[in-house]
Image 1: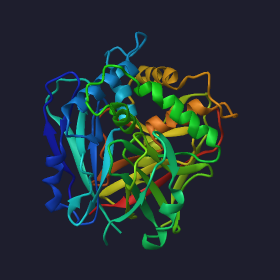
Image 2: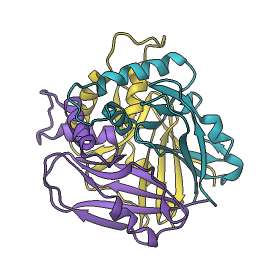
Image 3: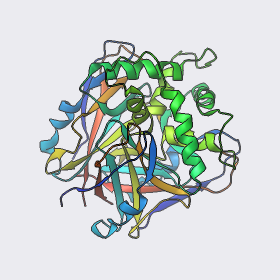
Image 4: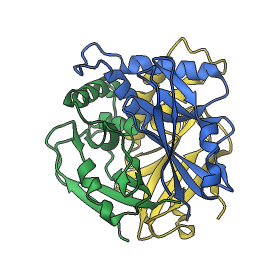
Length: 133
Length: 133
Length: 133
């Protein structure tokens, strides 16, 4: 079947957008056992699985990532090398197990689209079901 | 088939537990070609593939990760935001290729459950076989 | 089918090698929908998906990673613990969606073999096709 995709707009320079429900909503088109690959097609936005209950955690994560990527000697003319580094560290995709027709996430786990060079319109996420065995 | 899981207890605040043999032991229930997804269902514990021969490497990794996540301005009241950041950096899961009925790991590679907010009892790992093609 | 592999030599201590074309060249042996798992079998070399258009980005990434892993108190006698940490941060593998017989990468995304303890000969990459569903 063709790739599933969805788009979203971001409103901040750096922002974590909870996309768990968007992915879960595609489960009727997926196998009842296997996994779903959630991929960013962007090089300045990552996908992460992490705590989704307390918004303080998400703010803490963004604040802690910033100095890891802050440098004054980047050469890339677009000035967003810090965003590329954050994507390198967090990853362009995450793979979530499916069992019994449900995402096998822990109680506190959520899937986040991580904007690091926003705000942007029409960020695209590719959602790929993979067969269990 | 239903998801495979196993549990383990950790004994330190931060600790790398080699789970390669636990995953390998499930190979009879898996396809002879494909991959196995090893997932933490926790937001303060990661999965990593790295060097498993010299315990000094594992101690070095834990010591080098600590300052990357150390901050005095975290707002999350539970006080474990550093653990959430480490999980963001290392990842909640790892996908290991299977060929000829064996994990396709390099000579020095092992799979680690990475505890960052321990000690804890009954940490759970989900093991999901995926079909080759 | 047996695992697909290929080898490459690296020429620098730290170096990003674009392996997208090597992976794409294997697509005729893969399903038209699913994903391809690209794995390093080494513990001092990672796989990353990131910007491949401007070489300045790649230089920036290597330069920004260096201080994150730089320490003077590593105990591992081989002296390459910084490389192990970089692999922990970037990951030993990446999973790329396939749809319509093509890698579903964004316009600027490329797949990189990341050498962190080179130069080395015959670094090996394992390429595993996974079935869509």
